[in-house]
Image (cartoon, rainbow, N blue to C red; front, side):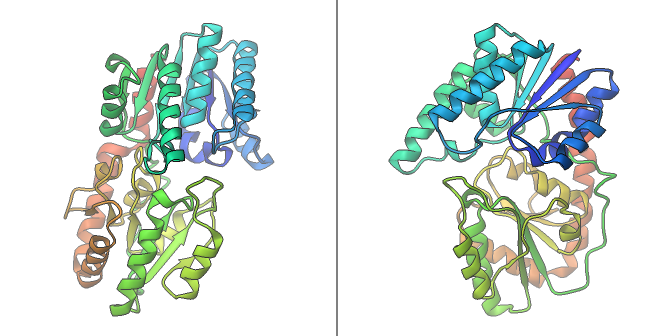
Length: 369
C-alpha cells in the first residue's frame, strides 16, 4: 500500500507521528510525508524512518484565500501524481484542504485525525466569530466524503457530531498521539526548590497568561518557588508577544527558557507539570510528563481532563481561573509528601492507556491496513 500523511508543521512530524510512520514502514507500506518545507535535519529523520518527504505550500495560521487556494491545489496535484491507497491528514488546514482535494479528484480513502479544536473554534470578537463560522463550514464540506474521522477525546467527537460536521458512524476515538514509554522513562523527582513547568507554543489559549499571573501571586508568599516556561513564539493571531514574556521575566515570576526539540531534560528538572490550556485534543507534553513520573496540574477542559484523576495524579482547575490555579499551586508547594504517589499514578496511567504502541495499533485498525 502507498500511504500519504499530510501535516503542516514539519518540526512536529517526528515527535508526534514518527512511531506511526515507522509502524507503517515496518508493515511494508510505502509512506510519503507531506508538510511545509522542512530543514535538512527533519528531512533526514523522515528518511531514516524509511519514508519519503514531500514539501507543499501551506501557511499554518490565518485565512489567506490566495495562500489557501495554493495549498488546495498543491495537495490536489500531489494526490493526483502520487495515486496513494490511503491518506491520513491531521490538524486543521491539512484536513480541510486535503479533504476538499480528495473530493475534487474522487479519492475515497481519506482519513482525518482531529488533534484539537484550536483558535478557530474560540468565540469572541466579530473577526474570531467569522473565522469560527467559516472553519465549521469548511470542515463539514471536507469531511463529507471522509472514510474515517479520528478524535483524541470524546468532547471533540460529540461537538463535531452535534454541529453536523461529520456523521457519527465515521467517528473513532484514540488516546491522543500516544507516548513511547521506553523513550520517556520515569525519573526521580528533583531535590531542589518546587518547580512548575509549562511547555507549549506561546499562545494565549494555552493558558500561559494565567500561568504568569498565578506565578506572580504565588511568589509573593513562596518566593523560592520557580515557574518555568518552554516553547517557541508563534505567528498566530492568538500569539503571546515577546514584550509580554520579557515583562514577566523582569518581574521575576517567569523563567523563559526558550524553544527546544528535546523536552526531557526540562521535565526531569521540574516537580509539577502545568498546562492551564483552554482546549486540547489530548496534550502530548502532559503525556510525556506523566510518562516521566510527574504530577499534573491542568484544566477541566476538552482533552486535558482525560489526563488527570483528581487527587490521584494531580488536579484539574477551571479554564481561565487564576485564583483556583493559585490555590492548587500552593497545595503542591505545601504537600510535597504527596508528589511521589501522584508521580507513580501518572506513570501507571500512561502505561495503561496512552502507550504509543496501543494508539498506533488502534489507528491501523481504523484505517483497515
